[in-house]
Image (tube, rainbow, N blue to C red; front, side, top):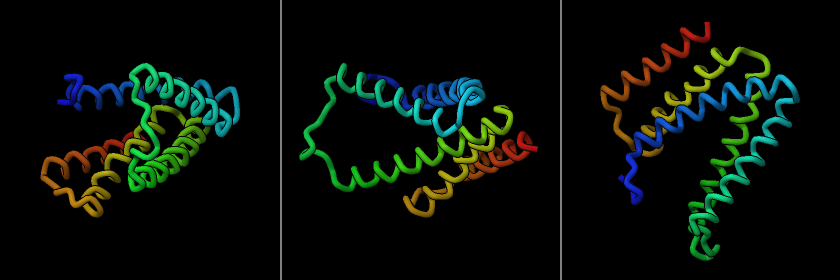
Length: 143
């Protein structure tokens, strides 16, 4: 549990729900404009909402209180996010949302593999089986 009393699973479920809406709304949005421009507008909205949330919660921090390592990895995460969004919106523009989104969720399998390889996380039978089922589901839905 975190300091606001919400379990990480509830937040993860919220993430999944909003990701589903992202696919549906994005599919409609990219039908009306260039996918890269659509990604730009989406990014502006995210920037605005996040800035408002941080301001409302009084969570801004002084730059000298930030970790250099943390900043470097957040920059790398931002680059990866941007590239992911550019690919995702272009895929939505070209293909059906019901087939693009499951392939996108192969990120679960990649996270498991990278977490084991680079973060030293242990592979349990539950995580291994779950990742295999996600991969199988994505493959079935993409056909």
